[in-house]
Figure (cartoon, rainbow, N blue to C red):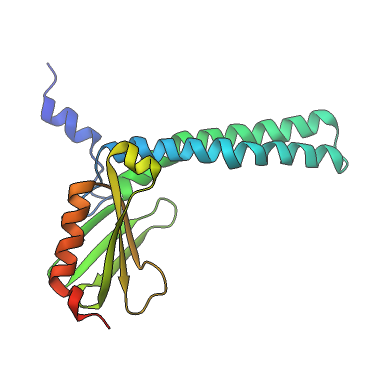
Length: 177
């Protein structure tokens, strides 16, 4: 007999991937990350693979070598599009503390960003077409120091994203420069 809590716990990211206290993204964001990866695969990476194969053929390689290089590149990009989005999803996390917002992300290069809530100038919630399709949003946090968004949290439920935005604005949003 399978114990359901253990089965569900196995699907959750390990503590090494996301520190205790960090909130993860909405579960449907995992599928959204895969859809975005497939769009990149077909619009950028596969054409790039064809270009690599043609380039090898034109600049001194044989037709078979060019075909092999293009096929190998396409296979590698395809495997990356299948594997990377789940790892990326598992490593996203955020935690709103009293004095700061922590954002963790990264697969190959891990990053932990601490944004002091006192420095928050304004906060946006945004939805692109794919996010709208999934009912998700991303929160973008701007501080007085940055020219662009200093922190971004993708893959949140729209209501959760708006609640996080409102809480950040309520805490220190009127204290901006």
